Length: 328
Length: 152
Image (cartoon, rainbow over all chains, first blue to last red; front, side, top):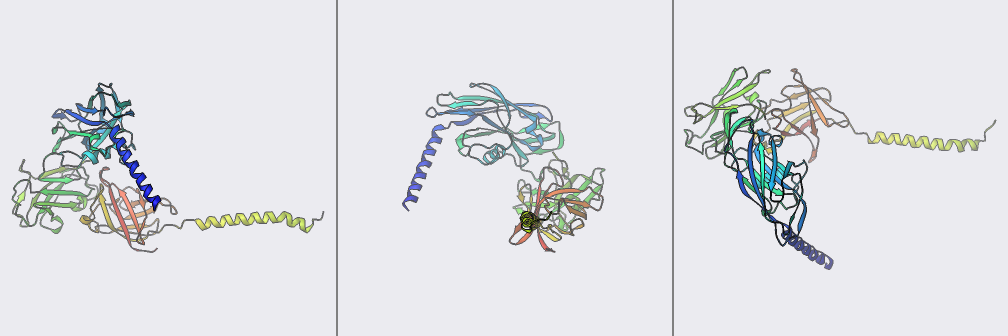
């Protein structure tokens, strides 16, 4: 009994000592914002400057061989890991950066860097989850702490917007290889103003505003299981009082052959998932009875009630919503 | 020249012991041989995820498959969700004793597709788990099937 008690007291001391060490050794990481344009052209390079700031603790010791880690949040379709270059300037020196190799995790975390960034910082104001963090770190290592001055860093991010026209909120994350990512003062994130991509493929996708109609996942072929959602809670529609909502859709093959499924059949009935929110899962090839050899190019769809009297279409165009199949 | 019977015994004994040992080794090899996996029978879906999100309650038991013996036919039940292949055909293990993958060859002439699979036991029931991407490679589906009847 005594031994157990002593062991526990010993552990508590070790714990307390460890906590003290962490507090003494760490610096605070923050940022002074981001300079990011509000628009970009699909496929053309965009330059962004992110400004991390490190405030060393003057009472702490020096941490050796530290790398600064910077994350960039972008739509998956941008393939930002391959299409982004980062470099930095600072009062501690300038240098190049490269992708954090796969398998590397922040200190005291079991998640790899991109997953840890997603867990800590999320996807900001984006309502479409088709986003990813890509992680870069400084090629050079530093000794930081003690009498180091406050370090102001300018990270230059050169990236290439993907092929889709869109409005999206990009994100910028900073941490270091030695600091404890589970402590909120040891990492920092900022999300830019909504960024609009033009000159690419339509339809335009707005990641940042609630959508009357949306498809999940964002990218599909006709051989995926797709979820079509109707969110009538964001604006008044003619289906506000509907007790049942049905999908009315026409899929078009690549040669424009139409496959229409518009009726009040049980297979077209949407599930009610919230106040004026409806959803249906479907496998397009089966749902539209697409013959072998034909491939769907798009779906044009609207929502209707059980009598077929009230129909909700795209409020902007006055036409059915359009979803175009395609992968990243 | 005549050999002393004792001498013969002295020479033969080690040879006999060696022969028995070798025979023993051979017997043990057979003893440890993995029995061929048998998944023939009907399987129903009990869990489905899409990109890590559990969609089981939404798709219900919308998928089932019946396997014949290794190297023979498979038959898809009337399905309302995508699978590795879309039509009936023939299937085979990559290795009957230590299978890690199953290949499906639809009879409609579509290309043969080979996917890795897991074969766990849960609460005494055999299960098969497939992970696959029938559409965009970024969309990953995992189906967990449980045997409704097998010849095992």
